[in-house]
Length: 140
Image 1 (cartoon, rainbow, N blue to C red):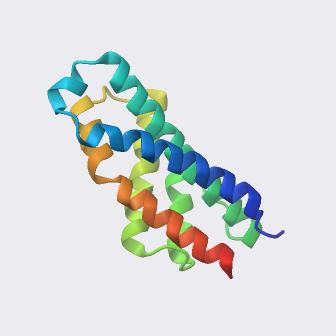
Image 2: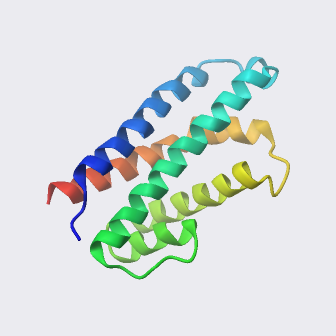
């Protein structure tokens, strides 16, 4: 099976649209954002969409390349790291994002909204680096 570039670009569009949205929150005061239920929910949903799109991309590449089947979302990024598609450190960061997604979706633990903001301000670069690696891959 070949990599479906159209599918990948569609997922990248979802990621980029949400990153653009989340950048608006980088400039806002933390207390202002944390006091707004609407803002926190919007941020959480945007983060969910970003991570979900990254997972979809990883899943598609693993399938298209015939790599071993992942047992978890986090493991998908570990497989991409082992295969040299993404760097080891990026693999670790994206695996953590997949675990964060599980907390968001399943509510395994109460989420500290201030940590959600830190994640929004500091971890989006990892997603951007993932996109760059994927674009390099599909150019080949």
